[in-house]
Length: 618
Ligand code: COA
Ligand code: AMP
Image 1 (spheres, rainbow, N blue to C red):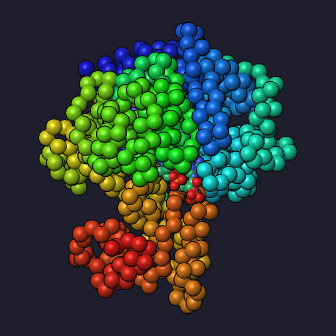
Image 2 (image 1 turned 90 degrees about the horizontal axis):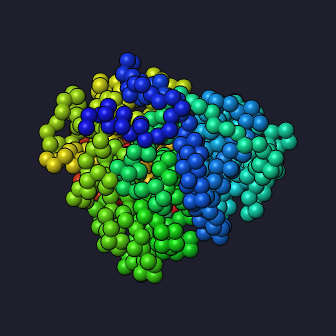
Image 3 (image 1 turned 135 degrees about the horizontal axis):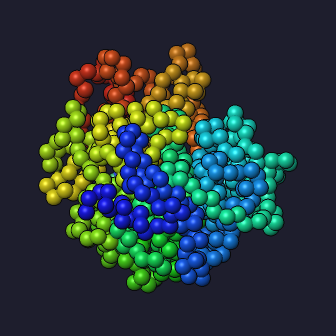
């Protein structure tokens, strides 16, 4: 089927107040507009529609929180009631269509309720992952300029309570933009003082709230902004539109994941990431599935059987997580003893994404679960898979190391440095021919020029994914590495450039480099090497420890920045470019060649020593 017919047909499957007469407006590339004259509402499609169609008593949301020992379920009718009333709370604070609302919350149902309440009003939510520190939150507050911020008093990690409220207060203090109001979910594990005149207690506000109706919005009105790491400390505000998101996500639930309305679908991620937006909140609800909010980890909450318990307890049909979660389970339970305690006959397939899936993890998962384990490739920018074995269309043979073929709607190609297509099996830049399908990003918030320059200028007519890889003779795509400074730590996307910016702020640091080194569990870890200013005569271990703390304070614990050493000099080319790739290869113990352009080869011996000191380069 041709691309436009595919999306015309998929669009007929969602609720529109005004059906679009046109499928694609391609007048201003790369700003393509899908379904330009349609009007719709994402919350209506996620909730009201299902209640009207008789799904009101079905579970919409299961909340399972081993870290707080809580389990709770909401039917579609109950969730609609909560969302409509919270939309009323926001409306009372003056939130109207187009306003931004930041959601900074742990994995609790109220996070999803807040997101859908924004969508109900046509307001634009921007969820900030709880593992980010105040400074990162402040950057997002200044960029998104939210009218309201929704947060909680705390998050609960296995080993500690994370006090969100002080982080929020510090972020608002740091930011130039100030929200009109904050709505705070007070959790019993740790309360916090509310700021008079600014903060509202969630429960209190909900008790007297009037339900708000859905506001129709144009298909191209933004549904949300989600910030993601780029090459600098200024994150990219990925903007997703409303109509395209509903059409593409609903279509993908059947085509990619092969789930039917009524099935239980579980994405073990966090609402702060794109996986959470697309496959904890929107996709499953657009499709009438039951979704799961799991506040816990794959291991340690309480044991490596946690995922199997959830699957069997709620009859999960399709599960989605990052390979790192399976590596964590495999490490603690290599022979799958915990798995044998549960009946997993409900599970139809497991999908993995977020980082390259190493074949041994894939094979282990296949052996343990006995169901298809599907590696699929996508990005915050695309919002849904670029490449996958589409189980609802045709199940392809699984080739370990490859996320299979391009999903319908994506024309994936590999280009060389000159923009020419390379032959089968040859590595190059992975690109997607424009236009990207519906549901992908339509621009970057407040940064239209960056949208063009970061993604569309290098290869005119193509979207540059930032990944390198190749396509084999059978059309299977292999995603090998990023072409920029982005690294993947436990499935979380982080910018080494942003970490370098933080390290450079340390008063004793003259220059620095952060590279992503291999880690058996998390895939990659950031490792920093710093050179101190001449004349600084302090204990270098102390300086390195301060650097570690600085990144934790400025970016957050999620950066997992724990490897840092002070070195005399950094290896550079004669033109002054730091040889990060060479340092990474040395750290990982990979074969490497002395760069022809290196300024002083003897530096590499010192670097190797420093890396050994951190447990690398062996
Ligand atoms: N709020 C506050 N802090 C958070 C947080 C949150 N929502 N999420 C994580 N953190 C903290 C952790 O407590 C940890 O802090 P620490 O340095 O004090 O230990 C740090 O951030 C790193 O967290 P994480 O990456 O989760 O590492 P971990 O060692 O706690 O757990 C895994 C490792 C593999 C078990 C975990 O990363 C995981 O379950 N990954 C699943 C994959 C996933 O969710 N991917 C998302 C995209 S699909
Ligand atoms: P994020 O935007 O956080 O989803 O991260 C996107 C990046 O994660 C991609 O650009 C890839 O580098 C990597 N990634 C995601 N899924 C895969 C996969 N299945 N195989 C290889 N890399 C992946």
